Image 1 (cartoon, rainbow, N blue to C red):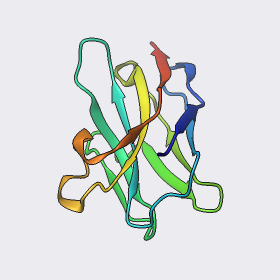
Image 2: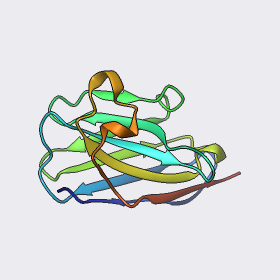
Image 3: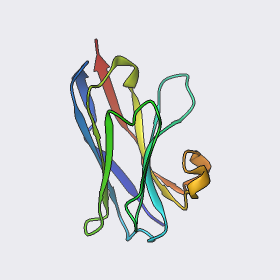
Image 4: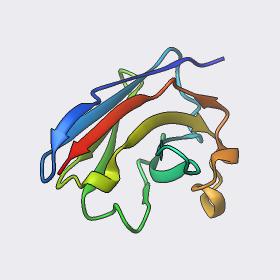
Length: 125
């Protein structure tokens, strides 16, 4: 079982940046992907970005592709999400997840087996 711990959330003004990090307690299976999702109050969990652990291939939600960058450090079992040009609508709890994340369905939460507790990101206008 893998435990995931997110960090880096907080309050930022619109147009600002935040960098989220997620540390895994165990080595990630090479074929798996680590992803970031977010959930605003009253909304469904929404895919943001994912990265294939072995290849480094990245996947992004269309609405975030130009502003968010996902990266990984295989040696430290960590994944990061750099978020730039933040907007008030980016306000949400951001979750890190890991799982098989098959390439044709990487945006579905069902593709991920383990989840972190989440970190709050609040963007003020």
